[in-house]
Length: 596
Image (cartoon, rainbow, N blue to C red):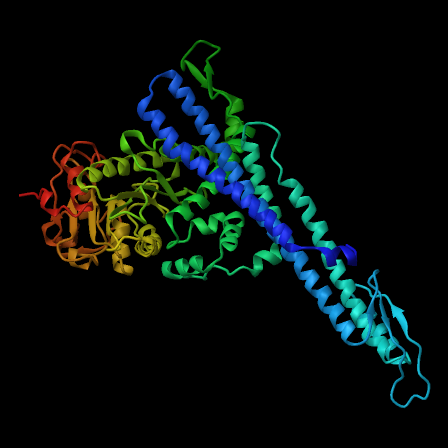
């Protein structure tokens, strides 16, 4: 980039263009929300039949298109601001060098060279003529040493200053040229395919584009205030509120996964960030699965004898090479599909919008899904699932909290309710090999405490909201560990099918007296496992028997479960167990049925 171009460069023009993309992205976001939360809701509630189903599918695609536009506009906006930032920095260096040169009586020429006046060094009899020097960018120890030698030898005392200014100008011009060269391909890459469908490949390209913008914009991104390292939810909230709109947009565009994981930030913000991660992750998983198609496992026995079918050699070889990865990808795909189905169910029978407050496909996967906005809810319940829980099987856990939302909403007297599935830890995956050990709960408990603190920080109601922690099976063990390790920040605790909670009595659960509730359904085998030392309790009392929440000595309110049986029916519709939980969640304690 030459001197005239850099002098004429106006960062404000690129910042104004970035604002234009912001406006477009905002419109796309509003259109997406309108389709998902108003138009789609109306269609599902008022129109039935095949035509309505087909229209709904088209609306889903349209909402996805708007989401893609929103995401790409965010990247373009950040890229333009990053480019303007880099060129503006170079321009400031150029202007400073030119001003210093003028102050020293030197003249900066159109080609970047610097002319200096005649002069003589102290002690010299003859005045040396003036001249012109051209600078060089960068420099090295060798070239710097040669320049110092030339300055010392030169008879004109202004020569050295002029050379310094010329070098500074050359550095500024090279910096601007490098920025232009660096950003041009990144900006060109932010271009969608010329069609009307957002494909998995498009979303994978978003991830690539994000990496490119993050790489090119390192200086810009490094200039932004970073999230507090190891910060509390209150610290996180303060950091986010202190950012400008532009800075928030840059963090969302370039660091969505980190933003979505920060407890204390608004639910809307976390949802926006995590939906970006979800869309990109889903596309990546689908494309990777397409590369390793599963062959047919069995075929008829050609000999016509027993067994009727035999395992194909191709499948055996495929399974050895791809089986483990295929299974992991399939679980991730199933989990993401379940989350999307919950998004699509918004409005059905009054179901509120869903918020994705956490998401990760690594290992067994993580997901935090809320029915309703916890920031504005008067009553919020957070449910922790137990053994064998993972992203692939999250459908059932989301359904449980959907049922609890419906029951609680009916009891809330018009106040907002939010029910949250919190799969924010690595749950034990085997009843026999994993569940007897407490480290899964101990490792996950700090994250749960942090999340509960974040709900309190982000809640905007006058009272700060009424929060209930609900655990099922090993999830109760995690909640107990959270109370033992730190402040639980809950008003009520509900246990269902608990094998043990790492404390020996309800008074140690860090909630007000009388606010620990327990359910044990007829035929549920898990509490008995806890009584005899299985299930992660590890807290034993006289006779080698553990105290669990179902025991009288523990001191919990024992709620009736009515028709519920076994270990998995605590959230079945029209049961005492579900109604009792809803009564606790909404603070309607007089409606809770206690075992006689």
